[in-house]
Image (cartoon, rainbow, N blue to C red; front, side, top):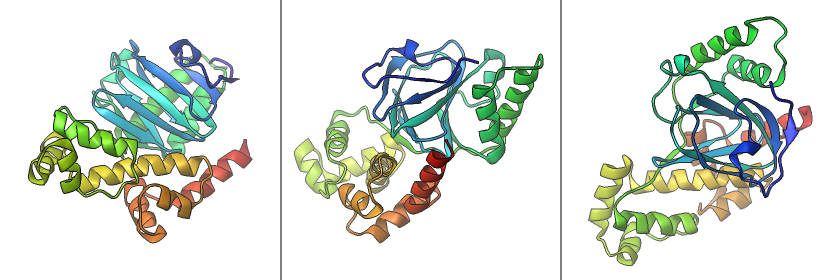
Length: 263
């Protein structure tokens, strides 16, 4: 396995991130669009990872792991100082996993297996291969838990989502956004369901959660994050965050602090 190393923030060359291994990445580190001939698992043991493809963006906090199949163009961005773990999956094993980018929950067994595979030199022949088979088995039995934000093809819908990307905290209604984009509220509501598979409210909530994860990873308080991302009060933010992420924002930040102190 490659040795753990630091990567500079202003670098975005795909050669700066190994096909397998581990490294510390600074907040805001970006990796330009690229693809691999093998499958790839990426896990931020500390920090938060966003993976973007033509199908949208997936976000993986430290309790999730991303999967990208072979040949699928993708880019990465990391939030917070990130302990990035990258694991190549040989083509003969890729058929065991989804044929599209996915995000999975990280069980204790899965986490430890990924850490060992990306941190330790193989001391017995075949040890890594056997442990990788455990990782594949764990992923096969683990339901997907995507923080997926799909992107539209329709120009009117894209105009609306671009406005929200630029300012996730804006409280503009769909009708008001429609007037800016030149489409009726009814048309936009239909497009959110048919193109993106979710309601306008759900899409905007997921977008806000993506930004909230980045803010929390950088150390912003729960209250300030709620206000910054458009929630009227911390309680409604906590409920929405727990519904999407599976834990409260306070718990998420506590786990980040525990991970940092353990390094």
